[in-house]
Image 1 (cartoon, one colour):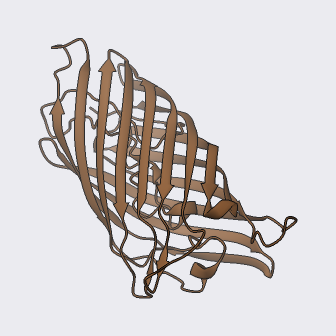
Image 2: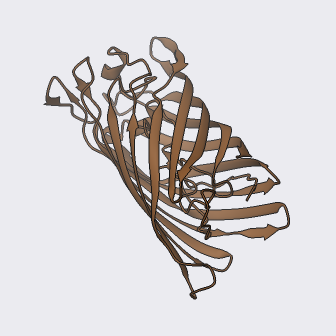
Length: 317
């Protein structure tokens, strides 16, 4: 099942629940987008995909490269006429999904970040290796394609984010404390995803929770809850595949802590609309996706998300 994809959606996970009894089963959790984003903290800290997902909808097992951009604006909020400054988070990521045994896959994410922002004292830029993520994905249940009116797929996931990205203690005191290459902490990911399909049409829902620990600088980013629902259509003919997608994705961030003390105005939430598609031919796939905020309240209103978009190229294993 060598499919190729071009995903220009705005959803971070989405999937194609196809029945396969071999190791190369099609992951129902395609597009573990932005949600399970291992090190994607509030406002993009060391973003590695988060709502952009951990998988492709057309490739169940693959290796590829992905680029994504997140744009924000921030202000100190001290005065009603305080200036707003632009922040750009850029990530180039090598990612792969590898079959281990039937119903079990392992995902690896290796991000490189290049972030920049404008401040009252001038431009600031950081770049370097981000936090590496390892994720195990197990398919608990899937109905056979031709045995029922609806095809159901249920998957559970668990993973670990390694503190391979540099954490700068000075930046943690900025308006947007997520202007970092990494969290500097060992973080844990738990997720569940459910997909229901009727012929070419399907609905994907996802819920995941990221548990963040204190780093060596006595700083801890708040735990993160993500949820999403995506409606998709899958067209397949010979070696060609096409999957347009549309949906919603939400993120909730708890407060950050430093030296055991809760930091004010570090919690937040955001709801995004997502739109896109994936297209593929033979073993290669190309994708693009985008997200726009519908409603948000980040860091007490001092940070606003503008947009997110990504592009990827995969090779099916």
